[in-house]
Length: 144
Image 1: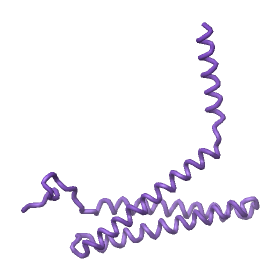
Image 2 (image 1 turned 120 degrees about the horizontal axis):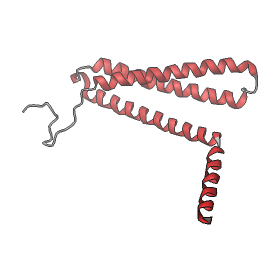
Image 3 (image 1 turned 90 degrees about the horizontal axis):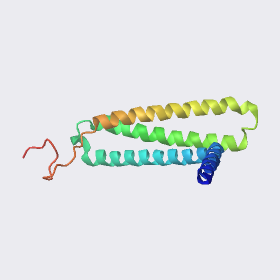
Image 4 (image 1 turned 45 degrees about the vertical axis):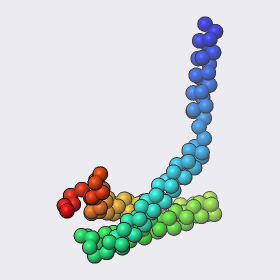
């Protein structure tokens, strides 16, 4: 009986610890994870750009892919610059109410850039004609 009471007391203390979760710690972890995903997307786009430039005009959608990949990289860089400016604004001027509106505008623009970047990358993956290699070393669909 005493063991059950101890177990219940431990469960309640764990529950109170869960309720007392630090919101700043969660936000920091979320921001770090988002940054890592942004870096992964930028790296993937750089790899795709390298592939397209190596293949050249032989690629079926060369110009389209070159434009979309370049646009995606530019939007990612602009989004990063806006994030930095928003961070600096938060650190320096967000205690003044007159900067709230401009911070919201920057945040909305950055969100729009993120949406267009995701949409462009969806089309990039749709037009990518690289085929995975089969066991014999040939790409699927290749005929000798």
